[in-house]
Length: 191
Ligand SMILES: Nc1ncnc2c1ncn2[C@@H]1O[C@H](COP(=O)(O)OP(=O)(O)OP(=O)(O)O)[C@@H](O)[C@H]1O
Ligand SMILES: O=C(O)C1=C[C@@H](O)[C@@H](O)[C@H](O)C1
Ligand SMILES: [Mg+2]
Image (tube, rainbow, N blue to C red):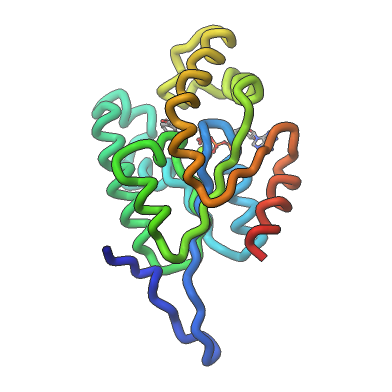
């Protein structure tokens, strides 16, 4: 295994480790929202894995799913995740909702020496309310037409995915918390 991030860098005659903070969670759990604020607070760069994949492939995530299929997307997701984990700068990384649940992705992160991972946990009813209004650009749920069907889908999906999400180093329950409150809780583990 080779991680650039294991290296330390001379800085003002000190050695400074590069740190990657990874936000894990279901679609709509707040990874992008909280991630940007956390990066600003820490003066780190923010990287959203979905946006990174979209840039590299020059297609929206929905277009990738439609034209190349989900398996192609999952292969690229692992490839780009590996690339990012090997990068050598301080980073807050917001994963895709499914990233921890495929291939060896979770192992890559758990075994990484300079990485802290946080699961932003949100209950099924709150995820449903949030996602029902924002499902259009999320290909796995865009064709679901009622809140009841969406709630059932999310419930089943979380039943399968929780096993992976809960391998994060820290789990934060974010129900009824503002982004600012979630950010403050996160910072407690980082400062
Ligand atoms: N703590 C919060 N309280 C209320 N609304 C929130 C909170 N965090 C995020 N939101 C809202 O929920 C929606 C989804 O948030 P966001 O896009 O950050 O989720 P995500 O985890 O990045 O989703 P995806 O995996 O689909 O990219 C957005 O409209 C965002 O403004
Ligand atoms: O939960 C998922 O599997 C996904 C979540 C999004 O972030 C995207 O990565 C994509 O739409 C798949
Ligand atoms: Mg996002």
